[in-house]
Image 1 (cartoon, rainbow, N blue to C red):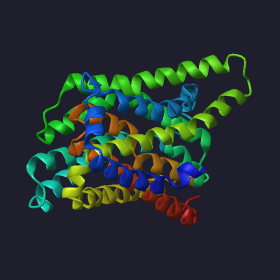
Image 2: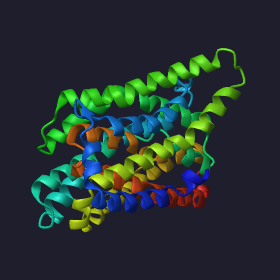
Image 3: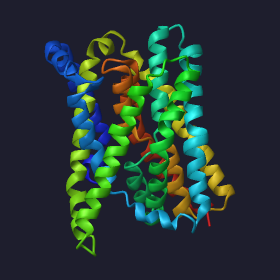
Length: 339
């Protein structure tokens, strides 16, 4: 990992402090930025999120899909965890904590928004950072690419329906037009841009040197976009956070339980399926981590910059990196469990 990825939690923490400080000191500036929107999409945040997502999509090689049938067990495990288990356990934990355990500490409207943010995290499987987790666990890089590519194709079609289903089950009104627009804007178009970029560069570049060089040069910008988004979101949320700092802790608790719980399910299933470690570890990492960039973008589009849903997705960024690093450590320590 580069310095940006290695210390991502530190940079996120710094941006949170800066965002809250600037938001409370210059509320007028953040109010002006918040007003720069079209069709419920904030233009400044949309640019930052595109800066985040585009470098990830350039890495996806859909030509690798032809290899999907060679080792099907790892693919099946990833798909079952990502699309049949994780979204529903996330929604259940959100409801349990904010409607039952934390009901006396959080008002009903905020509780619904926090649950919505958690649902958006649960429905968005990881696309970018999973390559880092795979590398750190000595995973099969080509197989990881196949898994990510398959998940991205499914996400184009499944993200909106599953999100709408779970939001509806949580008694949250689903703005379908905004949801579909978000999927097109933050999934379909970046994927198309990534595919076109690869085709243009690969025409006369058999060794992929130019493509690899482009990916390396774009990676820091992805983190810059993420940090800029975090800074703005916490600036927009400054008043709420200063008035209720315990909110961050309340959101983090179910997110931590979800992450460790999903990994335990996936890792146990991988061992039962007798997968080799270089397939099992990345499969579990993909199933455990989230495409938090997409979750942040959709939360902003659906519920607004100042919403509890947007705040919950950003807390997901803060929680995920140190937790995933701890899981990488655990996976490496238990390599002998697998063939």
